[in-house]
Image 1 (spheres, helix red, strand yellow):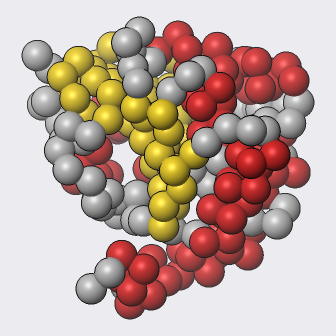
Image 2 (cartoon, rainbow, N blue to C red):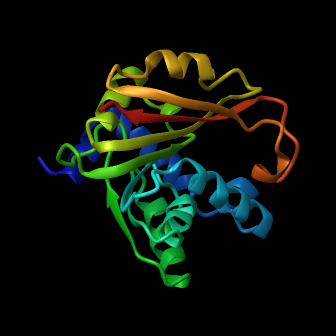
Length: 211
């Protein structure tokens, strides 16, 4: 069965595809989604630069959506693969990348079960997707196996004021033994990332593959 057929047949993935396809046209209207504001774009670029491995070449953007982070990663000179369950989101990612003269390998794929060989990437980046996936601990194991030696996992997540999401402590506890925690950087007090002040728990977790 092909990945495309799998996305059609699995109820969870079919539902997710329908939800995110319906959001694609307006998703980038939020500053932290589209990163169309120069200050927000610069802030996210510097955050990624800070935590990516210095010698990184290849990066997986898991649940890339409309490709905003993928484009920033490509702008840092990295070879970027973006995966998402939503064809409409990927169409927008390709269009945005083309308009900005950068290359992103966009693939229709379940972020919870990426279909790549082990040690395919120097880094795996995921923003605001892990909380939507079943069995986060298992997903983190899947992402860790994709990392090359000294590779890093960068997670941007949150516990939202709506009562949904993941607390930072819960994500840290779910990290597989193969990953060493580097930092938990709180992002809630920095409106530049979000385009407005926020009152909920938002953070970045950086972890590195154990030698």
